[in-house]
Image (cartoon, rainbow, N blue to C red; front, side, top):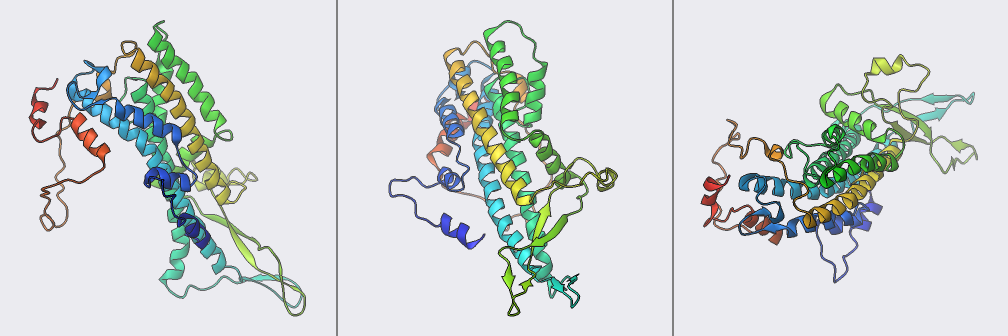
Length: 381
């Protein structure tokens, strides 16, 4: 990352400060206090003795499913924050790579005797020169991947907190919204809460960024991960401040501006057929990246505030919404893949002790995973 960014992150924590991922998130300007409170309250509701899982869900949806769904819900909530941290770190690395790429092309423009600009692109000296642009691409992909993962996990949090009949393990925000859209008002207090969230969620998405920001981000991620890559479109613009030579004439110095695709769900040929509409967003990719991080962060926090309200209401009205078995339809998964690595047995796994955060211990106890009681799983419904 750039020296200024590294220096900022190297500032010591306060003496009374608890270091960790939440502190890192705040230093990266993606702190999530509302998500943190929601995660803490969900964890506090774990029962480390029978009935296990979220205690006030019992007896629904059965002990094994209650354990699996409870732990996955906690994991979804905390993973939103973890992915925002990763997006912010990818952004810092992208800024450094983009600066290096721009510096590589700073002197490609010269002025001939007639005053005409001549562009001569530098020849790569070695693979490291060619890697610079790919490093910038790598971190653009990283930002898009991390933000999409944050939104997927946010969808899981919505499904879990609202007790929606949809898989917790394979959740995303679009799935949560589709399930909410299908709900019919049965006049019950729980259903009215769910339908209220449906309306409020749409409003929160609209308020978190410019029109279409969320579909664009998801389409951009899908293109990067699942489709053929769109052309990388960049342009050279004058670098400021202007430098002057001994003859007092300006020395052309250039800066590279990257543009991200305007309509990431379409192919290069399709968007170029839209001439004269630009095939790219008419802003520096840095502005786009900063914008989607801000929008995703804002949406995550506003949805967390909403979910916290629902969680507390459900705790006080535990019979109003029953956690559905559909959230873990097939129960405990036992299917395995054949893969055993490329050098099986070269690093055996046989720990005599496990050291971890107290949160891990609470999760394992609330899942009945202690050695002395693990056998209870055979009796769970």
